[in-house]
Image 1: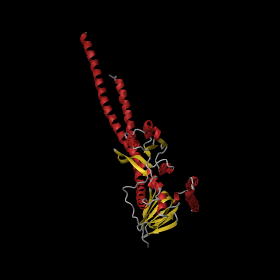
Image 2: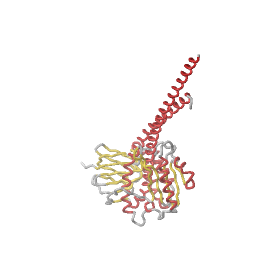
Image 3: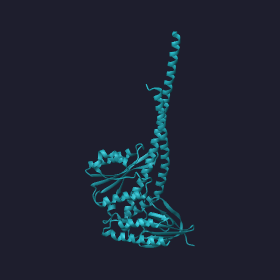
Length: 289
Length: 131
C-alpha cells in the first residue's frame, strides 16, 4: 500500500504528463491544419498532371518505343519499395500500419521469388524494419531537418528512384505511405510509380496538338510525374502523421484524466482511513484510562 | 474587345494565378507563343522563361521553368515545376538553376537538352537583369 505522500507525488506526475500530452495534441492540431492546406494546395497540380499523363500514356504507351518509365524494363524481378514513415514517434499506430502493409508485401514478393529492395524515408519505419529486413535496405532519406516538406524534397527522392531504375537496379517501384482520410482514419496505401500507372484519371481529350512531339513531352514529363506522385505521398503522409498524433495524444490525455480520478479516490480513501485510525487510537486510549 | 480565356498557373506547391485573361504569352520549348480565346487545343512543353498574362485586372508576369502548358479554346492551364512572380524572382535563383543544369551528368543523348536548358537559363538571366 503506497503511502499518502507517494500517492500525492504520483498524482502530480500524471497531471504533468497530461499537460504535456494536451499541449502535443494542440500543436498537432495546428500542424495538421497546415499540412492539410499544403495537401489541398498541391491537389490542382497533381490532378492536372495525372489527367494529362493518362491521355499521353494512352496514346503513346501502346507503341513499341514507349519510354521505359512508362513501359517498365520488361521484367518484374526486382522490386524497390519506398517506405515512407515519420521522423518522430508518439503518433499511435501511424508507422506500424505502414510497416505492417510493407511486411505483408515483402513476404508475398519473396515467396514469389522476387528480389526486394527497400528505400526508407523517415527514420521510425527504418528502426522498425532494421532487425528483420536490414539486409534489404539500399538507402535512406533523412527528413529530420525538414520542417515542411517541399517539392524539392520530393524531386530529390524521385531523382534517386529514377536513377536507380535507369541503372537497372530495380524493375518495379512502389511507394508505401498513409493516405489521409480523417483525423481518426489513415489508410496505408501502396502506389506503384514505375512502370507508371494512371488509373482512375479521366484522360484529357486526345485531340491535342503537341509541341514538341508527343513522345518528347511524355519523356520530359514522366520524371516530373514521379516527383509529383512522391510529393503527394509525402504531403498525405505528413497530414496523416499529425492526424494520428492528434488522436493518440487525445487518447493519452483522456487516459491520464481517468488515472488521476482513480488515484484521487484511492488517495482520499486512504486519507480518510488514516484519520479514522488516529481517532480510534485516541478514543481507545482515553477509554483505557 | 477580344474575348477572355481562363488562365490558371499552378506549381506543385500552390496555385499562383487563376483569372480571366485576354492573352497569355508562353515560353514554349520551341519558341514563344501567345494564346488568346479560341486557340486550337495544344500541349506545349515549357522552357525556362517569362510568362506574361494580361487581362481585365492588368498584366502579370511570372518566371517559370519545367512543365507544360495546356491550351484549349476556353482556357490555358500552365503546370510549371517552378513558378514565381517576376517581381520576386532573383538572379541568384536562376544562378542556382544554372549550376544545377551545368553539373547534371550529360550523356550524349541528354547533352543537347542540357545545353539548351543552359542557354535558356542564361537568356532568362539576361532578361531578368534587364527587367
